[in-house]
Image (cartoon, rainbow, N blue to C red; front, side, top):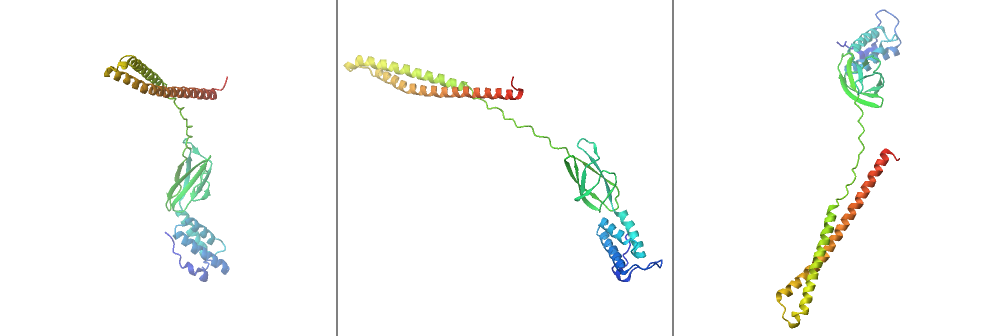
Length: 274
């Protein structure tokens, strides 16, 4: 339990008399020692045990009055019992224990690899371990009086490098649509030419025969006209289809040649030239 301050705020004026009757320290030393003791008790009450320990060490010096020294030594012993401590164990990504590196606790450098406990104030803390370019942060909590608490830190493996992005070569358009269009266009144009030729022959026969006597049958005239119209339509349509088909065939052949060249270049770059 914490020992009462016994009016530490008045110590600077009243002083603590030495129980041994030794010579009294000078007033400045008495005031400084009393202030250190009082401030250390405040730090202790607020949970700042490491700061309180420093204050009790100061007021336990030989220059302080004997009674102050005795009380401060007692309080110092109590604070050291109350101050928690931790032991760090660090393991690499492969599971092996790490015995060297750098570490910080709450932004203050510490030495976690010498096997000695590290004193901390009660509460939450953040440790950062740096080992061979790897950094791992971790939060932990210690309570008052907890001694040599084991805190294990495991370094996460470095992220593996992403495989290079490979873009598959563009596929050349198929050849068969162009061939079909070309052949269909040629066939259509040929059929149109035949139809137009038949219509023209029929027209000439009618003109040389019955037309002179104005006795041509309506069916014969209509057939010749129909064949001529069909020929006039099919020939240009067939030529257009053939031209489109030839374009697609040429593009397919060109793309195929480009893809083959790119593949050859890729193999040459991979295996070297001979």
